[in-house]
Length: 318
Image: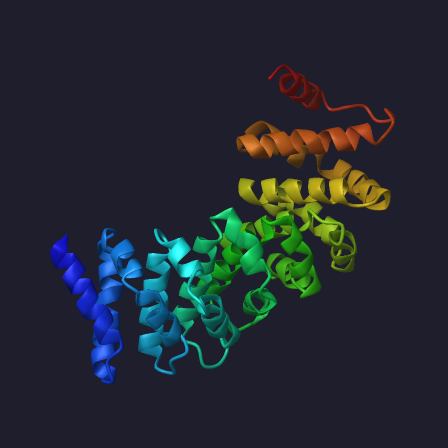
């Protein structure tokens, strides 16, 4: 371990060298170490590497920016507190994201977004990162930019999901125009993984009062209902997210949106029941809750599906 300490200290010293080549070689070695040797990650973070790495994110040299971003991502796995306590780190990550379509290296953009997602695993950091409107704006810009790679879009979506887990951040995502681009990813027929990640964010964003008007503008309820139609071939995860979004809209919206969800939801009872029967434990619970909303809001005028009665009985006995 002492050998590792000396190696780490030597490499970090080289990060401050006046020689660009020396700095580049040190960055490359640190990236490799943090990738292959988990034990070195806290050593490197605690030895003061993070400020150097953050500063390098502003570099116009793509190789250096890429190595720095990848190293920060690796360090974020075990040293989130050190990263979050480093002055200017979030601004540096924001810089890379903000210039995703111009000067930033594509892989550095992906690593920066993934680093945010890693940091957002700790719920105490969600309000802090969510207060950085420039970060949220840049993540939204990545998912709506036609030149963004699938990998960049997925990393941006994962970061947006982490941000949206904090309720007060959802309004910010809406205010910065995030709802339209999220639904566009579904309508453009992106790969299943992208649609799954997009609907996961949508389900979270739906959990605030402001979502009602934002979803209305993009016919969001209709899109979510279509995802539950068996003819669309949606994955179970997409269906679960659609159920979660509709349920959140009912819980956070006014009676008008509740009526719309009930009216359109009755057209895809089979899809909702499929989630209630075959989804994850959370998905099942949300699907049963949504079925209660659908049937409970019709004043007993419709005959209930026998499968729903069975599911409801199971839920009450659990």
